[in-house]
Length: 126
Length: 325
Image (spheres, rainbow over the protein chains, first blue to last red):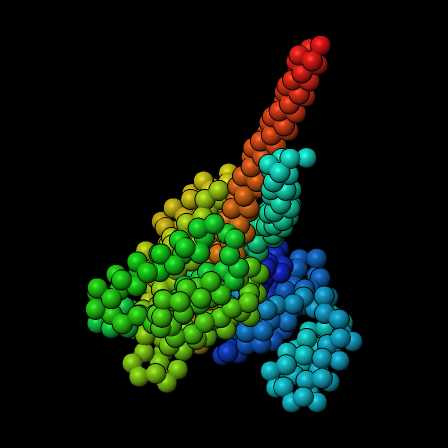
């Protein structure tokens, strides 16, 4: 089977790159799963988790805050303004951030913190 | 010690102090160039992917969108000028401002009204001094721009472009004037049209930041650009739609371009400052050498004078004693 090469890129640095079997992400029109050989696609991502499943069965989970995915020639680029790998997310800190956002009624910060938590939970359940 | 000698010594001590400062500034800039260059490199994948995506949509879709289609009769243009917050960087700011002035003159000659946006305290100061109007300005991050800074600047430009800023008559073109980091020795003030997207430009820009890597890396970067020019974009499926993707891409694209321009300018600023401070340090070293020589010859002249005074005095005394005998 052809390899699927994935690059997860944030605005200021390359977050993750490598080969994968399947990548699932959320675009504005719904959930999308991409394997090698998929038709070229360019979509707008919603702020959500992205799961990159590697051949070894290991999954890389990342929280992306808005952005795009573009796929062509078995190369998938996930572009996000900010992207964090779930394993780099400090759960306790995310919880504190969520608490703080709730008390200060900062909707954007609350969403960000929730997403971070969700990503770190998703990693645990894999 | 004679007065002359003291004066020379005092000056060379003063210059030595200045040299210490310029040497320190040179070293600080040198270390920051590396950091700034790494930031440029780190932002490259995002910038080139975004540009690629925009180019792909633009070449493959027949949809009319302000992002890709030039206004038939442009009457207003926005120019973003990127300068530094601090001086002591040689001709860095002067070059960027000269380039912006030339661009403004060109746009005005084409019958467009020009709105100027400025990044950096030096640019703001220059415009205020000359009593030239500008729409908006941002300061305080020129030497280490973060993505959030670029977002703020881009938001204002996008608002002006889409007419969301409430000013009557939206901006039809957006240009950026910044200093391109070519190598440690070469930085060029360049003018780039960001909006609407020019396709030829899109192909060129995918290779950006040109040679940001190293001096030797300039050639492979050029090759990459030519390779991309001949590249054919695949037939994409768009989610949700071509228009939807373009709408969402527009602000992201401007952000990426502004961020890249800010980062390159920051790297150029440090490189320009390092060079300016290096020549200041070299000049100070030369001056110290000159003053040390002058002080030495003054000391020698003083000694010579004293000796001749003693000799003269002794012989006058000897003459006087001989005369009285």
